[in-house]
Amino acid sequence: MSILDRFRKKGFDRPAAPDAVTLLPIGHVRNDVQKPRPSGWEDTVSIIELLPEHERRVYGLDRYSHAIVVTYLDLAADAPEKPEQMTLASGNVYGIFATRSQLRPNHLGVSVVPVVALAGLNISVRGLDAIDGSIVLDIKPYLPEYDAVPGATIPEGKR
Image (cartoon, rainbow, N blue to C red; front, side, top):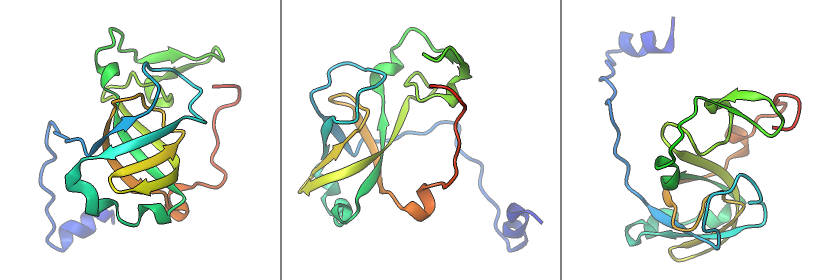
């Protein structure tokens, strides 16, 4: 019996999912990077400036070593090319969902970053691959028991 069947058996009837989703920014990225780049983010320190209404929501985040940051890559939305596949530097061809490219259908960025400091509405992080002014949609603490996958693999060759 599937999990969905178990929910239905107990009277759960999932409503239809919406056709479109509207998300609101919780903050913005501040750093010295002015245009998109494919690599070189490791040492970039960014400040995530949260909107005032989220001050209480960030409490305790500095107790975690890392956070997961979800961004909207707004400049990619205006990119003229919307590839289904890409040839990477390795020469290998991958579908866009098998890459970390910003040229995705919904232009979302997801990064696991070290939390450097938290001061009021400002979260300092290192390695966030988002340019100055990028919209932050969500932040979650990184939990190794859920977010790390021992033995995970990637295709051979440089991606």
